[in-house]
Length: 323
Image (cartoon, rainbow, N blue to C red; front, side):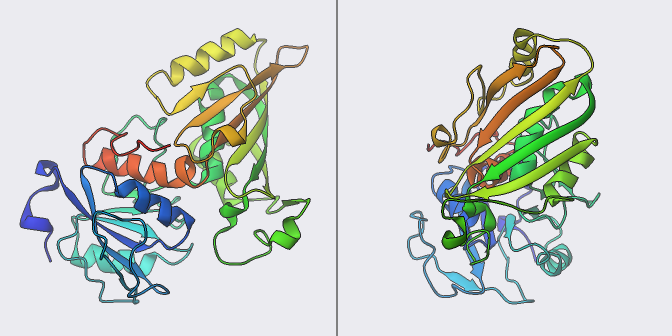
């Protein structure tokens, strides 16, 4: 099996994409971005539940339909990139087949399956300074917001970082469960996975080890708020911390740094991150700050496209235009 036109990837300007899975919320956002991407073309899509139905929202090929996703015999002829938009624990059987039949294909996994696999690159855009490889593990949404919050100052931290997170119920997925049940959520915020959440493990591995994280889900659809409590190794001022963040993210147009407390309702349906609310107690050592982002976009789909752009050696923000 060979890639499209047998042309080496580094010589290509157009890339054929297959979406494996992807009927969930993040998959739909990926489709919407691909719909206006000048270099990426969605050519195939696979689903267990939506086979033979049209791929909603992809106007470049309005007759494109989902093929049945089976456990084997995945037809990816003429495909350059496969986006694995499957449930956790579901991707390995497809990766094994793709590696055997299409060894040059670029793969990106949205699930957590390969985030701790040394053969895959865990890449967080706007922080990673290296080009994406052919096997990319997309970061988790909470883990992204936490790392955006603490990466610029991690060398100034002394002791434990404590992060409180709340997300919209879209983060619990489209399949009905107790965390997206609107009856449970009415007038409510639900704590869950209070020890050892997978996104906490990501941050400990790739950013800062001495961390505790408590996730919650609220009665709203999309968005994430992280409030971080951080003890620094010396006294600092708000102006000094603002300067560090602004310098760290000076080349990252998707990340805004401000003095005001960021609002979720200002960031939803946006590709951007907002960090702010920077405050100290009277010692000048104990820092609190907030980070908000859209869990379906910058916490997932936007970073899929940024990572694939990097892997294909085109500008990382290509195709990321709608707000």
